[in-house]
Length: 132
Image 1 (tube, one colour):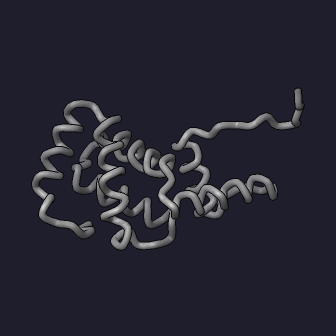
Image 2 (cartoon, rainbow, N blue to C red):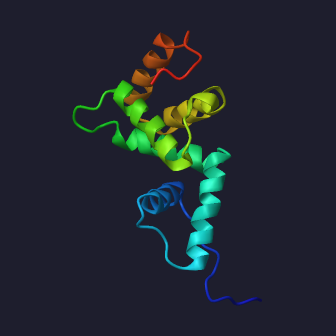
């Protein structure tokens, strides 16, 4: 058996996202290990790792019930979060990322959310680029 000071910790996708958001806001990690961890997560976000797609989907679904939030405004805010985290515009990556993101949103959302997302996707299926 090996013993270590800090056992391997599995971070939930939403926790990784929150830590990256703090780092982007200048409230980030302080130790070299924490900085390296967040830097790795940012790189993984830019590579569209499944945890990052899941975290974006969780962000969208969890904010869907906010007062005054429409699906359109929610999707815009989700893509803005993508841009904030990765520091790049989502348009060049939309065709690759959107199907997985919308599928995760569909899987974790409740039935009314799924119905609204399905309707929105059907209405926007002729658009293959990022429309905001």
